[in-house]
Image 1 (cartoon, one colour):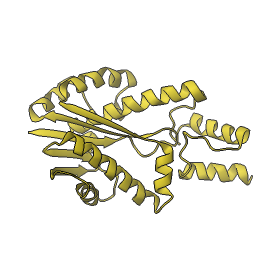
Image 2 (cartoon, one colour):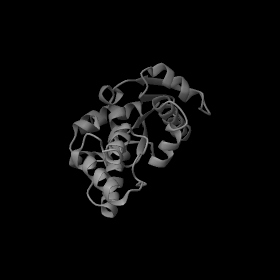
Image 3 (cartoon, rainbow, N blue to C red):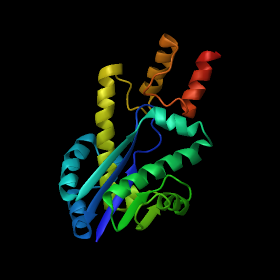
Length: 215
């Protein structure tokens, strides 16, 4: 049986893209992921992820990566309730990946509080029916989901490195990173303009913008 997993890099980044990753393996290949030490990307060092990524690709029948840039995310979020619109955008991207991979079964890490609703949103956009297993924290529960999370994280790290070369070291790009918040604060104070790599609709940025605009 051919299985695929879809994972997105968490929706938390304030700088840089959202990454949707899908990897398809045979059922027989899954135990090899465990032998390699594949686990949720957040539990691995960058060195380990970089080492595992090419091995995962070698095991996989196919893999797909989609990067959704901040401007596209902002345009979707501004048209409705943020989490609802963002989940629909992710469902659309996941369906696009599944339509490319065409597995029999797909394991999906759900960002929606209702994994069943998220699965339905994906199924409505599929070209060919398939079985969907949509769960919270699937990247911790299933090795195949962990594998996709690793590919997503490695790709995001590559993009962030490229952005560092252009804009300087802004840290991880997450609102929990003091370096990231400091970079955005200094950018707004110095340039008084938007930065293309930043998600303007993220609440942390709106709060920061208000603080700087109305001290």
